[in-house]
Length: 383
Image (cartoon, rainbow, N blue to C red; front, side):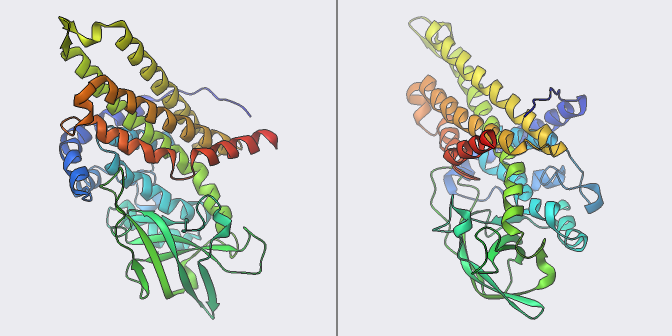
């Protein structure tokens, strides 16, 4: 396992400035209402599409801008700094399409990646089930071959952006008697496929502007040319996908934490108690220093993992898990401390830090809980 030094290039910092300007002007003003109403952040989606920040990872060969993994993380980070829900637009577009990028035929890539790159469609990812969360290999959704078609039955849970996405990468068991983990195949489903329905939106603690729903499949019949990769390769593709996309969840966590730290610093400089600014108290200064130290450590871990994702390094599994785990734990601590620094003001919705604290929590859970991340890291160490 090696650690390669890296620096952000000038174009990365130019990108950061461009995304931050869009986020502050077009996304941040709607963030509180999006959270309050549990409404999809349409203003953010429109702004991201207008600037090609909605799916920056898709290559130029598929009508995309071809941003590298680090650039994609910077986009997600800067959007999350303004609105956690909105950052799931580029993040989940990458999650949903990454199986295609890693394992699909050129024909499937040419069919589905350009509409996403052009902002005509969004893509979601269907892996988890009610009884198959961390234990993905125990999934029960099945796809039965019928000539040149497949018939899919089952359900998927906790699907981000379900209901607004046009396409879904879905994992299903294609050989019930086959080897566990080697009997799963990936498919692309369309939102309007007959027999494909959605559950009611989940009522969530945070990221309320990103709809989360169940998917139900009742004899959904699709052609074989919607298969992603070979028969039986689905779980392998799914896990390789998560190695790459866990890095983007780390970036989301960094962005949320940065937004909370910025708000806390601004508040304590203005708030006065005992005749001086709260920022003048050493106890507050130590809290801010610890928050900033954890945040910058998280950012460097995410950027290092992004560089490894771009190169396809053999130790990406460890670094992706470590970046996601550390950054999300840090984001939960930083946002909680931000609420504490604002005192009573931090606990009410007049200020954004309580929303950021609620939004941060999910980064410790989805794309593999942080307990699972520690198992991934330990397995890599013990190989």
